[in-house]
Image (cartoon, rainbow, N blue to C red; front, top):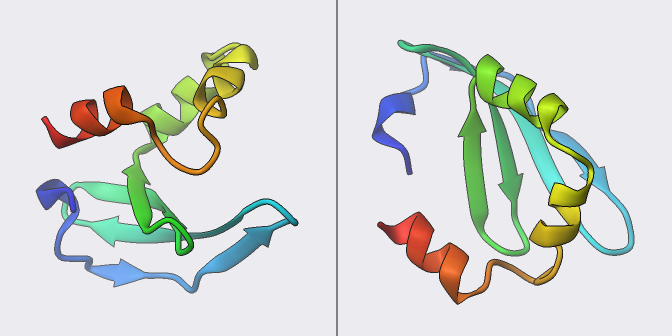
Length: 86
């Protein structure tokens, strides 16, 4: 877990977003470095905390970026895992 966001000063309740393919839990958490959106995939065990600028950057990205991300819909492939672990 990212050390910059621990410990939480406050966290709101999770909101579940799901369909037949995926389920994620999202919530706003408050840290000493500001608010973050936590996105958690309980099925896969992945979690990410995004700041306002990181969320805004998603709006700049072309929709095709999700095609690239979903090439391995059951989790990141070896290249993404190695990047996350570095």
